Length: 335
Length: 293
Image 1 (cartoon, chains in turn purple, brown):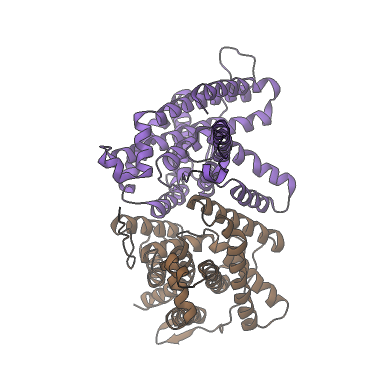
Image 2 (tube, rainbow over the protein chains, first blue to last red):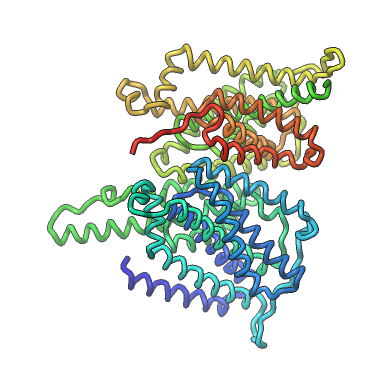
């Protein structure tokens, strides 16, 4: 896809997304708020895993930290929700950067295990600091009302706020991965020795990526605290981190749009599974997961990209009068 | 001192369970570089099968053997049917497939046998053994014995049989093994079968202590991760030693460090993972991979 086509597509999708409150309200709309929040979190994880090649099974931890920073600021100091979101982002950036430093020594599976244990430890730690976090009871907040006397419901206002944050975060991320820094990230993923030879400070970029990734996920967590108006330690269990990983792999690694698709998958497919079978919804979800990986091992975005490439290749080779390449040959062995 | 000996023994007993499951994880990891997140759930499912047999009136040890056989076949079938289609795909794709397997098995078990906890019999006599002032649970001792017997069998299999040799070769160098006429893909399937068998042993041994329910193996799997990390993910011996060590340390810390108690026991395993990863990422027995570039 060339640059102009993707910009047009983005504008159309964003315009459609902003018009959603016209067609739906209440719970339906809240689900799309949740999709936006997940999309931000997946974008964060995708920066780390898809673009930089570092596995994390613990991004639920940063999501939880973001959510609790926001919740504590609102609950203890009565700070307006709008201010809590950037603060959560900055603090998660710092925490992520600091965690990324020692994690530099770890690769692949070992990094996955270290982050996995982080995800496991967070609920217990949250319960430990009961004075701030309200222990296992959690913190109950109030949903923000629409300002300036706007005649829209709380859900509609929340959706618009979340969507705006999502658009801003995605534009930033799309620019980041196209920039010098983004190319350095990808170079480290593909061959870190070659990247270092070219003068890329691998250690710095890796821990920076960890920080930025954590910041994205932290912002998503803060938004979720605002949107749900409730935080409790047990909602940030290991399965949340696993869900994020499922989201980026299903959506497509190293793809900006893939995060939106992945967010929709993790938001809606469990519900469909529930509709199909009340008795064993997670079995249905598991079958969906495995089936998806069979049909599209490179995720939805990866499958679309491959389809596109094979189309272009066959068109080009027809013009040159040669044999069209099979899609097998067009498939590049990317991650 | 008595308390110390007692805690070490019960630590060794739970350690045996961690060792079995860690060994299963390592066996699959060595051959395919994949961590099977569904290992614990496969064990849980096998344990339910054993429970069903026993409820149908089959004697304990018959049910035990029967379950191990089914677990072995089940492991082979899962590798052939579920894992093989994504064998050459990116590692994350395979990880997602094993996660899918995890939720399927967990959900199916809940659906078939409900989420109610079920008592599970122990084959060992109830009375504890007294040695002086030290009281040892018979189930603990039995568990250790079963684990050690299984390990001995595995050692003999890998060390002295042609099939074991072929499996080791296939894990170490798939390409050369294929040239030497070993059916590498089937060796991987056998590895999955053996791993499933070891998981089943762990499940059956731990069920009398934890009582059987679909989420029984969740915590055990995390300790098994810790054990495998401590011992080094590439080393079966390491997995076993790591398992026993994690079991003992977990018990001793729970007893002697007052603020940890039973609630933060899990955090101990996590701390162990992190410390090992930071100090010696390849584990006690693992070899560091030196790659040529």
